Amino acid sequence: MSVEKKYDVVIVGAGVAGATAASLISRMGFSVALIDAKPSYRVGDKPCGDAIGKHHFEEVGIKPPSGEELDGLVKGILLYSPSEEVVLTIEGEGYEINRVKFTQRLIRESIDNGAEYYDETNASAPIIENGFVRGVIATRMGEKLVFRSNVVIDASGSARSIVRRLPPEWPVVDPIKPEDTQIAYREIRILEEWIDKPEYIRIYVNQKIAPGGYWWNFPKSIARTVNVGLGVQNGKGYEHPRTYLYKYILTRPEFKNSKIVETSGALVPTRRPPYSMVWNGIMVIGDAAYTVNPVHGGGKGSGMLAAKAASIAFAKASEIGDYSAKGLWIMNKLYIDYYGAKQASLDIFRIFLQKLSDDDIEYGLRKRILKESDLYETSITGVIKNKKSVFDKLGRVIAGLGRPSLLAKLIVAAEYMDKMKKLYEEYPDTPEKLSEWMYRVNSLYESFERALKE
Ligand SMILES: Cc1cc2nc3c(=O)[nH]c(=O)nc-3n(C[C@H](O)[C@H](O)[C@H](O)COP(=O)(O)OP(=O)(O)OC[C@H]3O[C@@H](n4cnc5c(N)ncnc54)[C@H](O)[C@@H]3O)c2cc1C
Image 1 (spheres, rainbow, N blue to C red):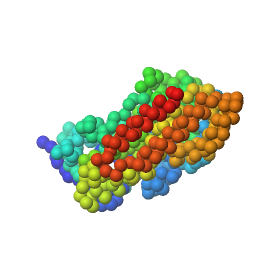
Image 2: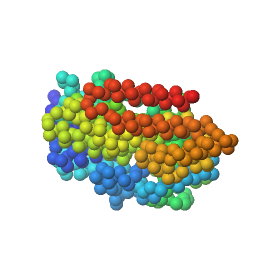
Image 3: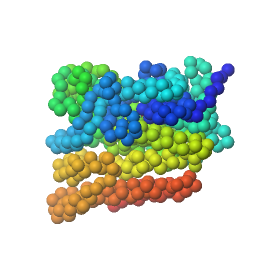
Image 4: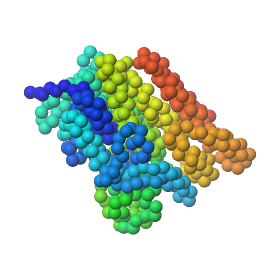
């Protein structure tokens, strides 16, 4: 026996991306089913550093966290060089959020708007009919449920529970390579002694401690609590990040006698968005669509932006009753405009950064090749604006002061970042032109890899 239900939209996954989409779409009066495999009290409990920029809430149109949703106010980032002798202060307001309380507020808002929420419900397969996704099959406490809908939104995080079961030739599938992901692990701990400047989150770049990634210490304002963890590039044979945490980080004096509150880790995609975030009857958002900043690995804000793009595109498709790839296509354009072009450009920067040694990074930060303001600007826009001063420095270095190859490669990376951003801004207007554009994207990556080797 199975129960069959019909909605305008079925959203698989009630993490921050899925819950935002449910809130925005139900707000417009559409019928929404939001389903998650977790029990209600655990939904939103995803391993995370919990840091998020203030600007994202204004961009998405969601009330920022307050009260018990807030674990601390952030004024900026302290960025440490490998030796920790150089510390850059990057100003920028944000929050340490209570991810569970915040996500559950979005779910409550959706329910208040009329959405139906199914916890402990596991979506096992898409329903595909005549080349369209028409819903999902799920189970809840041993009962089979059939959710039919005009559109399914896959917001199932790195599991990609629906999208990975679609025909592989659909461009929305676009699998990710292990080396374009990070394995991240963090612990929430109570320190014995509180630290200076708790309103600044700390990022430490050190290839020995966090190969291909970085480690962090994010203070929360509750009772000497910190979120401490690291990301390690996947697919390179490095050890699990927990090993590095215990070997190099928790042995530092500031963590002496600290007490564990929570532990866990997860995969983080750190790449460009998929070739398309939509196809016939399907949209994909959040980690399932790799909507994460490739350089710092933050994905909550950009996941919410993807949810906003999906909600607008869904509403437009409904006006004309066209839920095909063509009808939903505007989502790609919107996300690229909000975040995707910058994300793709930062993917080039990420590939460049992952090839640097600790000595290169130490040199770059010490000589302020990119200043604090440039780093902030680059992280917001995906463009290295200050190329002229980098060129000037290159001139001086070639004259005998330092490392010409590092600077020359930075110039190459900056140029390719611009090219990638421009290519994303030229994203095709219709699905028919997608293959040619995909070819250009792949060629640009290949050409960048060759240029870095020269
Ligand atoms: C250690 C670590 C630190 C991080 N630090 C930060 C940070 O400081 N700031 C930041 O912005 N980002 C950070 N990130 C990234 C951020 O956590 C994610 O980008 C973000 O939480 C993704 O949200 P999501 O809604 O896409 O996916 P998720 O939060 O993973 O939600 C997916 C949901 O789908 C459900 N689901 C999966 N499969 C099914 C199924 N078959 N049926 C039903 N439900 C299903 C899951 O139960 C889950 O609730 C970090 C990630 C890690 C791992």
